[in-house]
Amino acid sequence: MAGKKQFDMDTALDAAMIQFWRAGYADTSVDDLSRATGLNRSSIYSSLGDKDTLFLRCLDRYAARYGDKYDAALSCAASEPLAAVRAFFDVTLERIADPELPDGCLIAQSAMAIPVLSPAVAAHARQALGFQRLRLRAALKAGRMTDQDAETFAVHAAAVNQSLAVMSRAGASPAQLLAIVDVTVDALSQALRAQRGRF
Image (cartoon, rainbow, N blue to C red; front, side):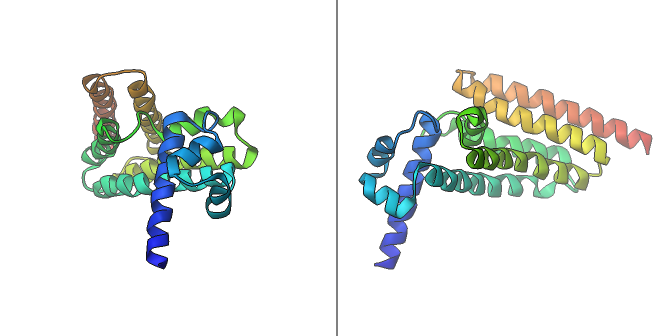
């Protein structure tokens, strides 16, 4: 029975995550979550928590799921920084292309909703957004970029990554999204060449 309950919990959390991802925090009601999860309101509160608590759980779930994929993509950064950053963007492009998933990005949506979030939830959303910059900076430093260049490109690449989600929701084609990535990877390639030329 414990195994069945855990499976049901995972299913309910995934359904709630998709609901928040599709509609956003502000436009998702407890009734929407009830319909999405198949749980009544009292079961949601007793098993999953109130709306803020459930949203935080979904945000953590999303960040962990895709964070692991981003970390795997960047794992070759020490020897192949360009390939690592392209693989990082590929994680996002593959998620966007998956017809089973909503358009956009739950973290990007959450960041845009910060003005209507409670302080605790807003802080969590900022932290989730910041993790992308931190993992990119660490990967670029492993690829022997200077601290300043690694920070600059990490901020830029994280911003581009979030813009892909926004652009996809606005109807940008896969070719247009890939072109955005190509410009960023090309700029990084030039920066890496210039840096090697200095040393």
